[in-house]
Length: 400
Image (cartoon, rainbow, N blue to C red; front, side):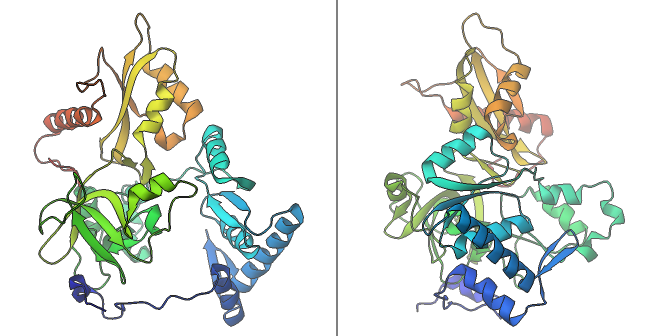
């Protein structure tokens, strides 16, 4: 296999290629239970479940699901946070040959209904829990200084959203080993990361994983590779990449081209092949590690009878990385308050998607054909924040 330049940065014990097992995922659990029956498989707030106990609970759950009528090929929705119940339900569904549909536990009824209709869910496991922005919450906890975090935390590895440089420095000052990486749902949340033992660069998402190829193509057309050091869209080819979007061939064709996944993330590659995210091609907002699509929020806002025009953007936020702001033009003669907007969104959107601030305007910037210019609103907001915060403040992933 032709060597990749970035492989010279791999840790000594990381292979340049991997032989992938051809067995069902649930068999790994059963193999572990046979080989290490008394070894802890899960530790949930101090309560441990061994591999053998987990296997037994999975088989009991699978039997119960079978009695309920779950069969091979059925779609089983799991609406659970990270917990033993999630692991049990996941492996039980796989053991029956069912297809797991992961559902965010913060979704509202309307959001769940839309996903259920789209994926054909026949069985649903549910639970509710609110998830924090973990790293920021831990580092800035009032008792952080008394907890000896460096001794308790072996490594903080961030990959859900760009980390502000200020927070990275806080982590380092606390004596905690820190690293960043990159992935998407379309790449099983993996793809690029910094070595654990080797060179790690602050602000860089690292280098590609084994068996993974990455190119950087022009943002406008995506047809040709850009020069090293020039911003380009990340396109990736790897065994990690999905086969396609469920029941959506048009979206699949738009993202997967000749085996390469077009990610929508804009990055640069330095002279040592380390990758730095600089912007996003799409308008997607990443707040507290959650992917938020502004158009979805806009469509909810347009359902309000008093709103004429609306546009949602992501703006820099010290805690969440980005947060959601809505620009709204009320209808002619209408009186609308921020509280009314927030209350309306509370009924329609998961908590992490709801606008945190609202600005009312008489008009929104539009193109010659009447399209609202979302990027211009974001640039205006960033410029305003820049004037208020001063030149020393920075936000990783945004041009200053």
